[in-house]
Image (cartoon, rainbow, N blue to C red; front, side):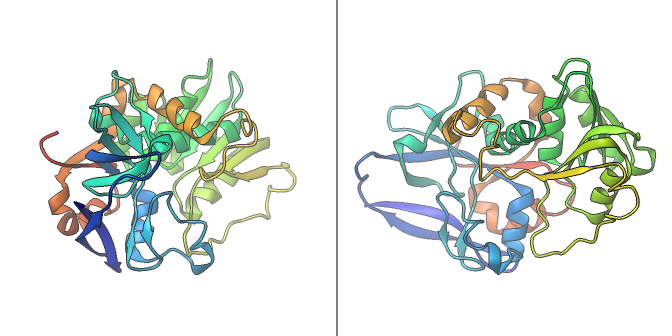
Amino acid sequence: MTQARAFWTVAPNVGEIRTEALGAPGDGQILLQSLASGVSRGTESLVFAGKVPESQFATMRAPMMDGAFPFPVKYGYSTVARTPDGRRVFVLHPHQDVFLADAAACVPIPESVPTPRAVLAANLETAVNILWDAAPLVGERIMVIGAGVVGLLTASLFARIPASQVTVVDIDPSRRPLAERFGCAFAAPQDAPGEQELIVHASATEAGLSLALSHAAFEARIVEASWFGDRAPTIPLGEAFHSRRLRITASQVGAIAPAMRGRRSYGERLATALHLLADPAYDALLQGPTRFEDLPRAMPGILAPGGLCHVITYGDE
């Protein structure tokens, strides 16, 4: 038996480290040693606060989570681990120092991607799926509302489209250097450009979605990448929504976007994200690190508004 330690959320905004015994690996399984994990703020903040709606309990289960919503639950999906033969892999596993996983669920990490940066893979996989849903065109005017990690990652990919004009909109002016680092313009909401042909909303606010509707061009596409949890946002679907023939599409990483469904597996989508992380510019989205042992005390601060992707470390790696 192997002793493992895992982070559990046990009450609203309360976490603890619990020990558990792992048996011998089963058929197709391997024992993995965690090197780092990332806190995915958008989803994990809702889980940590106990704000997952009951109607979404089944949908919101992470691939290798344990427990049940709302509490106690072992949640997370951004772990970099080492295999017994020394290879680094990315696994959609909660914060835990040692764990068993199916070998098929372990995606190799390219040598060009450092361990801390690799924890962004799950968020960048979300951004890849957003682009597959959005189907950007060469030369489009594109706006991303919300300069959190997913918003900035999405904007960084849009900026690679030839002749695209990408603007990141956020209420926090300190996000300007991050947007510009990825080749995007930055604007406060009151200065956001109009007549945008493709808009991704990633702020999880009513104001952000209203801004998308008011700044969309004729027949523009709006991709809703936020998740509002148990909130019921009010949005203005009157005014120019119908006359401009606007379209709102949901994008969620739990299903591969229709354009690539049947063409790419989940593992291939994740491998694509890991390949893109060879760009050192993405280091700007990392915060921390915090030692795994300190996570119960630190998690409320890590999930406070305004943070980026916080790295959790295990051992000396």
